[in-house]
Length: 196
Image (cartoon, rainbow, N blue to C red; front, side, top):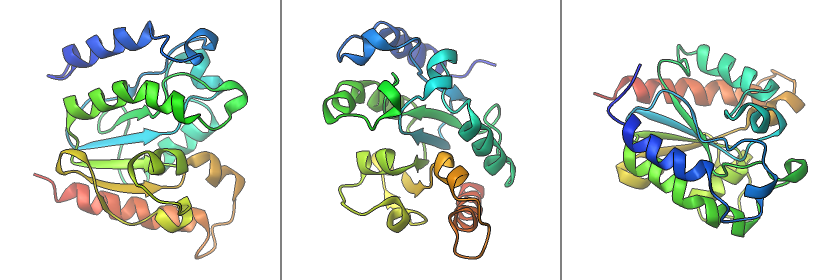
């Protein structure tokens, strides 16, 4: 299914695929531009591609991606139908290390273009790296998550736990990361359902 956004996004994708603005362009297997359905309602921004994403050229395809799909499905969202997914970085940092400031700066052009084209009403900032790319703070994701922040193009942004963090914290007890994520995704669905 093509959307009104596809032509503009494809032009940015092509530019991104051939990018060598930072050293990661030379070490990647594939650029990881986006997944899901381009739309102006909801976008999820992750941190950076991992091993499986680098191999496939799509964000959130490993175990963390499978968990993300389950979290989304728990409130009726599907990446094929409802949500556009991208990362702050389009190329994998070696050994999945945190992106360097200069790598984030080099890649920001593509992320900004995705935001400008779609102008989503809701932006989910998945993990600490994504959250601090938009919110100037020293707070960790545990303190940032679950709150709404003003975002670009009059959007509402909510930082959420990265699914890889949830995989390492298996408890579902009240107050645990998985329990908090369940509260967050229900709130996100509530606000999404109020959009016209």
